Length: 436
Image (cartoon, rainbow, N blue to C red; front, side):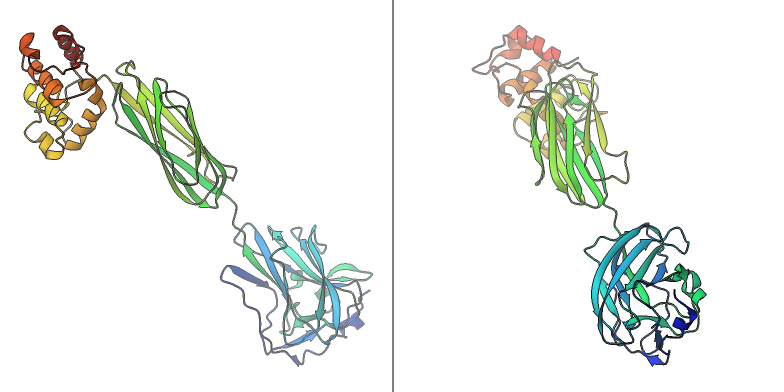
């Protein structure tokens, strides 16, 4: 057992110890119960025998879990070389006996009164989630041994001895009056998690049946970790077919064939914090009825835990409109506004050269960009004579004549393309179909 006579074997606290203390990094915390500073007196407890343990209890705070990086302790009183066993236990029970053992390892040390011993556990993955205990088990009698500080006080519930014949006891109950100079260097663990989210924006809205619809899809990883085995899925809306997909580097994607329906699927083995932009283009079927609402959802997922679930899907809804030649969107059809805008557009004019003096009263498409975007969407419908080309000198002229009230030969004379497939009556009916 560990009798009081062995307490007296403490080498006198008159030993003044000056040493260089290894520094902790900015991300690390040194947990210690002792008050020892370099240059102060300590006592090396010479009363230990083989199989006994000096141990300190530590109470980390703040982070839910810590990684034990290093153990430091003052081990001297003699300069012989001995081996010890370093043990770490879960100590959440708060009793004299520690809980489950988290780590043990044997080390050969040479006693020193001028340097803290330091055992590196950085590669051992020792994780503590609360109160824990660090013990030095001796495989020899007497010194070299662990030091106590000499400030005359002891934190009774944080200093322990495993003594032969007694088991675990608070060291103060055996007459010791100093805290063990045993320290734990810890670092808060960073939870391996990745906050993934996705957004989706549709352009244009409304979209003209028979034209292209683009989706800007952005996948964002707010961290803190990389997202492992990430995937993005997007099923094309009914009534649309695949045109193209633009994807960022690092992503591997599969798509339907051009002109087919189906789903887009992309994957990335590891997505770093940041954002990734995709552009998905589909064609809205010409037969999709006006008033139809297209809904398209993109969903992102990963194998890494997401600390903020619920934002991994995004849906864009787009109204479908039938193609019509109210170009400025003011609810009427006019040769000097809508007709002029069409013929200028087909002549290649853009910006204010396109729209200057050609906007009707109450126009809802009021900028050159809005007009160009709308005309881009219905360009294929501007092929009035059916020759597979939209041309200012034929199709544009036919439109402006029709809106001016001309019919029959006065409408079509000199305004038909060489490969025109529609006759005069068919042209009148076709233009009328664009004026619902």
